[in-house]
Image 1 (cartoon, one colour):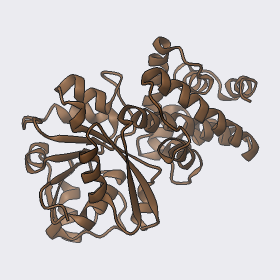
Image 2 (cartoon, helix red, strand yellow):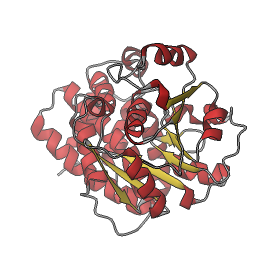
Image 3 (spheres, helix red, strand yellow):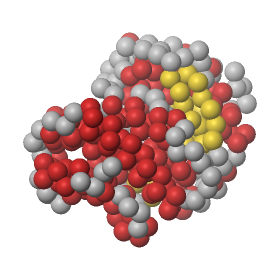
Image 4 (cartoon, helix red, strand yellow):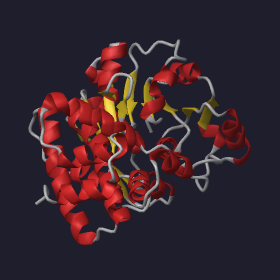
Length: 331
């Protein structure tokens, strides 16, 4: 157990709940911030999150539960943010506790809409957190399979490998294998981009395309991801590693993927608003699409899949005709 370091989880959703479960295997106590006071009271009384992964039972003695983000930040030196990127800025506005000397890990797979930055870059530029104190927790790993204690793999990236090892050790267990990476920028962009490709896979499925096309779409997706990330941050990386390709595949194919589900609904004719309302969950890829498309106007990478998803979600173009054109651009 890591007695030297204290951990806080920021967020009350399924991924935050999964991370809290992983940490509780190894840590004597963690702080857990949720803005929903009713959920906190339910957790204290019934030992599980009433809204997400309700099958996961917690030992209340291991949880310092709070609806005040400042209490959670003050408690810990390692802080894991696991809230939708669209809500990050509004949550951080509540912050009065200092982030100085805190180690910030992002488990958010998206872009901050207000700054069009990935979360690590946002903390670096907005809060002047040095990159050696910033890390990323990526998959391939679905929260639902963590709840079921099915063997899962994490990639922990940080500018300081010692801090990556500390986080990896605290999250590891019999069913969680965590490895470290030094590609903090690339892994975080990959975690954001794969949600866009999952939406594309969902749209294709909703339109009636089969497995043969899906395999072509995913193989083109990983190459497109490689081109995009190389433009953002050029370094030696194997795009076929699990943090990139593995995370893309599980998000593109899994029944647990909310981004694929969202895309599937769009392909079947739902509007964006109606799909979001019916899901009652945030599909990070929706916000990531606009930001990635805008960023790529400067980068100039060849991204026909991102362009196609942007056309459907933000330009109001008809999905069937957009994907018919996309099929001609893939190989």
